[in-house]
Amino acid sequence: MVNLPWQSTNKRSLKAVVFRYATSLLEMAVCCAKPSYLLEVAMEKFYWYDECVNCHQGRLIITEDITNKRLYLHCEECEYGWLDPSHAGDVGDGFLTLLEEFETQNPSMEVIRKYGWESFARHEFSE
Ligand SMILES: [Zn+2]
Image (cartoon, rainbow, N blue to C red; front, side, top):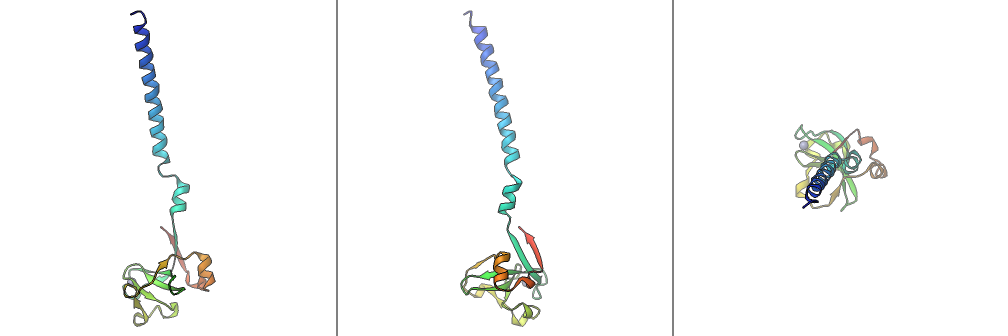
């Protein structure tokens, strides 16, 4: 009976400590939710050549066709593709990439250089 007030005070302060600890943990979680360094790692760099002449909306992104081991320009909007950038101004020389079966990936600048396409990487963006 004599110890009860002390115990309850102690419990209260323990609760306060836990609460403060939980709050700081929460704050830490909130500010660590999107660390900038992680965001940069998750961001992918894309290189593109010019505006698409087919839809006039999309960018012609340099895309690697890993099935046929070549690069081509891929419109992000209308899914049209051009194998030869020098013909990318001609809609008739393009093809609908959806009709072809091949695996693609976004090439790094190193890969683009390997194919000698660096002059076609006129613009870039990260996403
Ligand atoms: Zn297009």
